[in-house]
Length: 131
Image 1: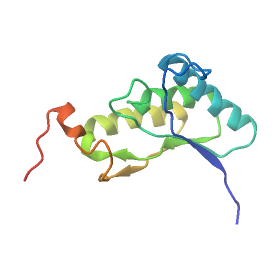
Image 2: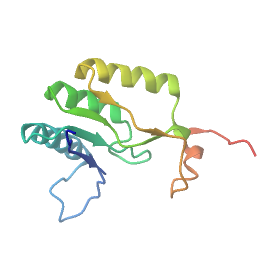
Image 3: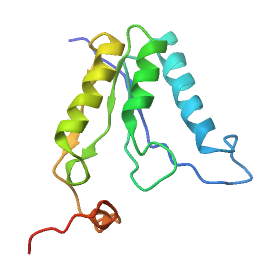
Image 4: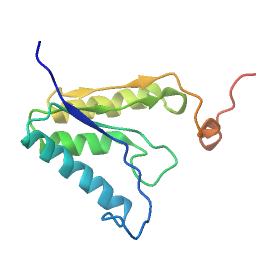
């Protein structure tokens, strides 16, 4: 059996004076650089978590497309996308584009949701769950 190793970036960005990333844009660029370096070191996967309602990583597919364009072998994907906040058709289009750019290396992690601190996040998208 071949063992594989990759990483999952939690991608939290805070304007901390101790952080090397000063902006959300820097976090995105560092995420791309991290995936490139991971591939160069022989890692097999680079996965990114989705952070809705945050300044960075709210939409993973532009980041994954950029990682796919800068790498050639490493598998790329999402940690988990909470489908409560997604339009499945738009997500499929965005994922398909990232997959094409990466040459078929995209892996999706999706879920039906979880009880977390963003449990009321649906309000930000104008949805009203059924009682």
